[in-house]
Every structure is written in structure tokens, then in C-alpha cells.
Image 1 (cartoon, one colour):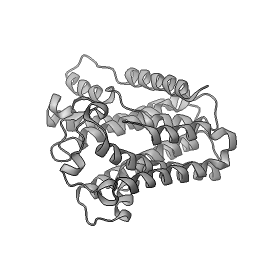
Image 2 (cartoon, rainbow, N blue to C red):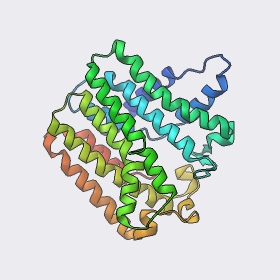
Image 3 (tube, rainbow, N blue to C red):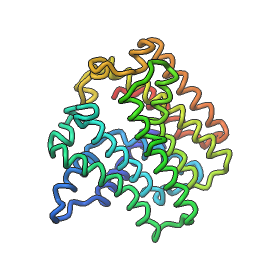
Image 4 (tube, rainbow, N blue to C red):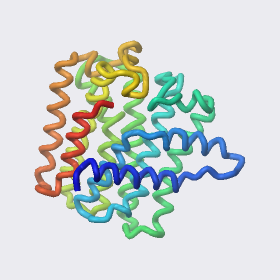
Length: 294
């Protein structure tokens, strides 16, 4: 199956699953669910779920069992974007071509919707136990990876490092994005490999691929913020420069950032050699992210 066909099919599967597990009940909390769904179902690249599915498919043919985990990582990503856009954080008015959550539902509801998405991510993994063939040990291992990647040693820690910059160096920048962007990307691949019953060597290879891919992903984001348009990205461009944020482009310049993007991508792909011909999907995702325009 060609990559774009595989990707589009799995995007539909993930979107359908997210729609199903987060209905809009007629209750006194209805506005909360509307706010949660507004951000979760507003589109997006779904890169983290796709990486998890591709990693799982290295070892298993049917990716259906991993869907609750793929949905969970996307919920955590969505919650982080809601909170990142708040006035106390990045103070952004648009996301994916639409007003940000707090512009539609207010700051209080946006905070609560983000909190609820984080909780819901854990709920759907635990709720899937009764229909899952994964062992309790595997479920706990996957949940541990996801929660660690989301917390103070992962995504939240990276946001803190980003907001309160202590030094302007490439080492600091890489540390920031290994946590802020890379941790969830790495967790997505690691969970796929753990649930797929990969060997210790195979799980390690997937983690290293994802670690470097996460850095490449952020370099590309920084480049696009400098070179793209608001119409293409669906959010204001140049905001990093306007807010004097530490980025790869501001630190290294555009040419060096493009060189680093290619370096990280090639280094990520090199770690897939252990899988031989089975590596195709992860290789194709790396190439897709390298060439993306938004």
C-alpha cells in the first residue's frame, strides 16, 4: 500500500475513534465537552497517533488494539495546545485556522477542557483493559511511558524551560525540545513497540529514531514559522520572532537550521536499519515530515 493511502486511511480511523470516544452528552457539563471536542476534533496532522500505529505495525498486522493508546496521546497533545495558547503562555488567537479554544469558550473553560482531556486519556486506556489482549504489565508499562512523557520530565518540563529561558545555546534548545516536543513523539513510538512486543533492541532502536525525529520536527516548525504564510499554517507566522523566542532559526539562522533538519532526519532513519524491510512506514513518515509545508 502506498504511503499516502496508508496515512489517509489511518487518519480516518483515528478521527472516527476520537469522535466515538468523546461524544457530546446532554448534561450540565455539555459546554465542557464542546470545548474538549472543539480542539480535539479540529484537524491537525495526527503525527503522534500515526507514529504509534506505524511502530505497532512493525510487529503486528492489525493495529486496532493500539487505537485507545493512539487516541490518548492525541488527547494529551490537544490539551497541551489549549494550554499553550492561553494568555499566560503563548497568548495566541488562532490555531489550525480557527480561533483558539479560550477565544471561543473563555479562559476558565479552556483550562478545564485541557485538564479533562488529560484525565480522559488515562480513562480510555484503563477502560480498554476489558477488551484488550495486552497483559496488565504491558498496559502499565505503556501508561508509565505516556505519563512520564507528559509530565515534568517531558512535555510540561519542556514548556517550563521554554517559558523561562536561562541561556541561549544549541544545547539548551535541544534539551528544551527533547522534552517539549520530542517526549510525546518518542512515547508514541515506544508505546507502539512495547505493545507490539518488540525486543529490547527493537524498542531501543524505535526510541532513538523517535528522539531524533522529534528534534527534526521542531526544527521544521521553527523554519516554517519563519518562511511560511498564515494561510498555509493556519496560525500567525513570525510570532516566535515577534516574541523574541529562542528558536533554531533565531539562534543558528535559516541555512544552518535546514542543514540540521536534514542531519536529524538522516540520523533518525539510520536507527531503523535493525528492522530491514519492515521499516518502510517509519521511513516514509520521516520523509513526509521533512518535506511538509505546514
